[in-house]
Image (cartoon, rainbow, N blue to C red):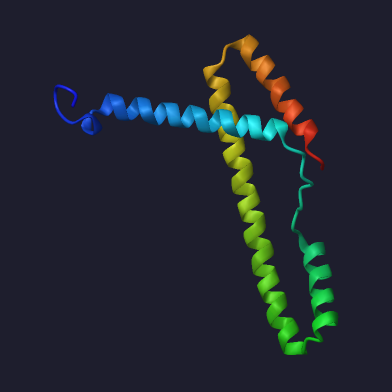
Amino acid sequence: MIRGGEPWKNTQILFTLGLVFLCGSIAGALVYRASSQPVKAFAWNDNNKQVTLNRLQKELQLTPDQTAEIETILDDFTMYYQMLQAQMDEVRANGKSGMEQVLNEEQRKKFGRIMHDFRDKQIP
């Protein structure tokens, strides 16, 4: 036992463990992202909704009432998907901005090139 009390109540130990965990998570995510195959992004939009609705209508032989209900569900899904995408874009931008504030000018330039390389590996 450590002198001075219980080690799990020591905020310095907890902070250090949290920081180590966070750094390890970030490093692991970066290595995984850099080594993994790019995945084609799927953007859900009104065109996809209409294609999906047409296919379901034809293959499932939906009634007009069923078609209307499913169209409403797809409209809700499309709006939800677009809101999530906007939130994800904001989270990415905030993360990038926060990291850039920590870096000096030379590091920011290198960071910009690294981020550019990550974007180039993704398939549009």
